[in-house]
Image 1 (tube, rainbow, N blue to C red):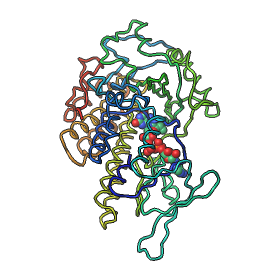
Image 2: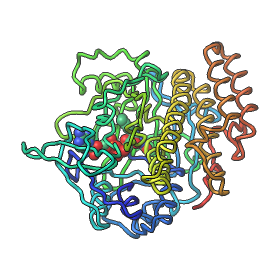
Image 3: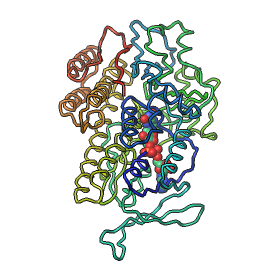
Image 4: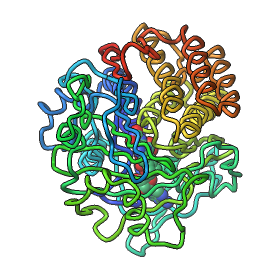
Length: 486
Ligand SMILES: Cc1cc2nc3c(=O)[nH]c(=O)nc-3n(C[C@H](O)[C@H](O)[C@H](O)COP(=O)(O)OP(=O)(O)OC[C@H]3O[C@@H](n4cnc5c(N)ncnc54)[C@H](O)[C@@H]3O)c2cc1C
């Protein structure tokens, strides 16, 4: 998307990708923030073919051949080891948070192999070049005779052949590879992340429906604000959580994210064995997968090392990294696509106004501070939820911090407030509240302390809660947090 925007700004853009399309990619769940930014980028940079992707209804009409899933919001269910899920009074073991008022305007699960292939084709039809199957392995700064400014010389390989290109500016979007900071020898700061998790994931066929399990068990689904499968579905475990994202082509993206401080999985075991061992502890999840087959990658689940990664520096002279290259925290609450799009928007604005001007370094520095600050905030919000993994009321309360931040961002953006950081990470009052509460979390142990903490949190976020979060009368079923329409 950034390539298309920069091309619109008059830049001569080359996109280099070591992979080829279509292919499995993870990070599939869009949010109201993601869709607001996407719609706005499509308008601002005259990219009308991207606009339909911002809503389920327009997506289905414009691009029925691009697989997606309907996402009305977020659903969370607490699973207890060796125990079947049973309905509890007041939905005490479930949380559903509505993101969109209707299917038509709802968010989507992106079937990334289709979406990414579509975007790659759009890059080319918008006039930029795309080199696929090219792995960049060396980047140098080099002076050019007759030119006062050095350029970047990128060297790579395609089919065993060496390939070279020069560029006046490099945007590093290589994600975990972080080719620019890696090549420049920039230090990491992964250890500063509070969250500490690992993932196992893949795409499956024939995963049973959780909604149907609940119906068969006589749980009160009538009070769900939307079908709980039409969501970024989180099955919360004692030692981590599972995501379930359903696409309409019969495929379900499923992943286990394990808290490194709690997981008892033996790292020497194969990913499939770790998966089976975890499901064996949670009989309902085991049942959900009883007919399922892994379809992508076909041979084996993907297993990650620690998910959290951060670089100390993410910009420099004539280069900048996008958020997912700058760092990553965790898939909880699906912040990835939204944060990436906010980064695309911010970097596009920097390059639009400061391209080859003396002000470019200062504005890149400000971009860096913003992205680092946003990653810090995501880490704070997500790690708080991990503290509550085996105390569901605490987890719900901590999730409300994320929803307060997200809905405040969406409301302010819809009201035209400029210069917002992702999740309002720049808002000192919000940050002070979250810091105070997350520091206090370490001292919350007994049930009475949990209750007192939840009450304190509800009172503290009041200035950022115009959508009725922390309302005990709704029994964890939030119908009305929908984002303003874009
Ligand atoms: C386990 C997990 C679950 C996630 N779940 C969610 C979710 O539910 N919702 C959400 O919003 N986000 C989620 N995310 C985050 C999401 O994946 C990212 O935000 C998103 O993929 C970022 O896209 P990107 O194009 O910036 O980077 P990436 O998708 O990482 O793409 C990197 C690109 O760089 C290319 N590349 C790498 N090295 C080289 C090289 N040397 N030379 C040339 N090309 C190279 C790769 O081929 C690839 O195309 C998740 C992330 C993880 C790890």
